[in-house]
Length: 437
Image 1: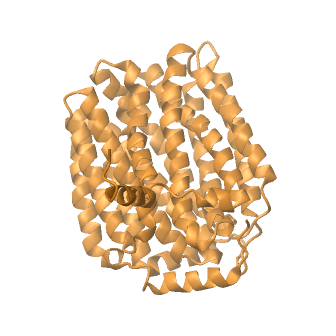
Image 2: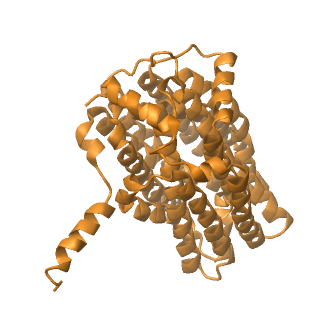
Image 3: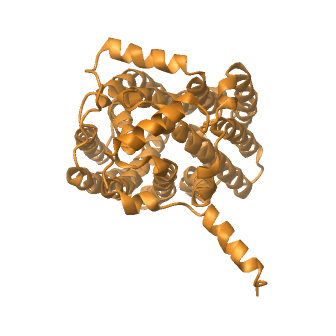
């Protein structure tokens, strides 16, 4: 039994650590977005496992799986920037709804292809290409919705809740996908994805409209250029993009997971390998209550990104499957912390009329990196070995993150209490009073 004087202290500590769920209580639209997105994201993660699995099953090639990342790269760059410009010019909720309908159609096409006697490999690459286009168009609007439907003082909590939603999907989705693929095949996995989109479509239909921000401009090359110029002018923002880009480019070996499962003679472990990072991420998310009291966000971003690289290196060196899963979980926890503070810096400092375009640039930093990472890891394994490709990339990430931090010291110095952009946006949001409840 705990000593009575210590019990209140322990309860107070637990309250400070546990995740803050206030946005779910205070914002109707955030509730709809969160619950609908949680269901559909599980289905998307089932497809995330099924696509590389099907390519690996048909071709047996490291490079063929890695090429999925190449196929996704160009549309992410082009449509990510254009999607950001659209998010500053249209109803963000409506754009997310339309692209979600298109996602459903592509997944349905994968179901049809999977049940053919000889599934077409080229169609899998086409689907990946179209998924990347839709992701580039949708993600900036989805990210830019949050500051419009959540009060300023709840942005940290909303970021943690969104991370929790992703954790749930990335743990349950791959694990469920691995089981479904093993028992029923990839066709059933794609079919589950199609069904899961119903939840997000209903939720988005029930949400209030989110009209373009005051001062927003029509999509144009000039508008995209203005967004890029703003990003370049903010060295602290550049630091957040660069740190994430190098971390994902050099230490994102997910395309190799089907081969890691073979390496350990455990094909049943594929879903566990995909899920393990998100188990660590969820553990970090559920104890993220402390994050709202942090002010030097950039330092946490840099240290957590370096920790991600180190954990991936140790994963590559792990002699047993349980140890490999443990290091993947540590990597996921580090990535969650880095991502949480990146999102918080963005939401606290970027003007709403630029939020969509900045979200498009953010999409490039956290989506292009993994695409490049899959290519690097796959070709590295082809040229050296499976383990060498993984651990060398992890160790190089630690060095690269340190170099970025030295070159962009504004990231390390950032303090939301004194940063002029954070102070200005906090004042404007408090005066605005247009956040839905």
